[in-house]
Length: 381
Image (tube, rainbow, N blue to C red; front, top):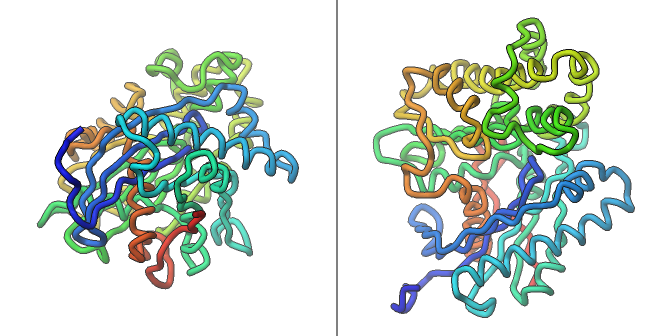
């Protein structure tokens, strides 16, 4: 560790996230200096704490009040352990840290396109995290944006703009987690556009569990999709999904691309063409992403490049096909911009915790559709 005293107006912030793939808690420790347009972030430590396959199944199956209640506290324990682990990885003690920002685990996300009562629910009890670590916790970042008329997602555009903007150019930051999402950032935050492009790994992950009898949680190294061929008529049907026709701002979740969709696909082709189903799922993610760029981004921006992060970057079949489909637009790993791609979304919640304590609005209305900029999160001391 650097022995020099920290600069004034800086905080050590932990960021915690479990994404829509429900495979691990990502935890980071960051030094955050300043706030707003002048904010600076440096990554100190990063750990990934995997869930067991049994716990992942428990999260995905939770659908009643009792199971959700218990899961909220169980997730809080997982997040607390990840926070303590990343602090120890940095060679520090909890008392050295200023705040934890925890996104939690999304179990329901219902924007106006899916519900007459727009709402969102993340579990991972912040009181448990605060009690186990002795640190203040900022959580529930999405709800205030929803209350302000927004989608509550995506939240990462604020980080993308703060960290990755470059004067005079427009950059696309594409995340391929369970859901795919993109931010395009340029000089002014008001010009940021961001939205969910559609399926990421979610459909592929669900199929991988079925094809392997639970032995695989994803299309590991593209090993399953390489054995199959795209089913053209099924791909055309998938691309007619109503979400893909929605203009931004838009956000998606398991409600549109989760197990209900996977089960329908499996019932039709799982017994006879399992690897073809996987190849089609890869093509679905690639084509949905590319069409989102062609319809909503390329007419508006002269993009410098696409910088990709998320679990999808570790699937070589997916990346080969996305790179070919978006050519000649360059597709590059986020790491070339100086941040490990696996840490990015957790870093966002370290930053958002800092902005909450600073009283700085951190939603991006041009991305979420909110009526105004608001301070995000709730503080548990």
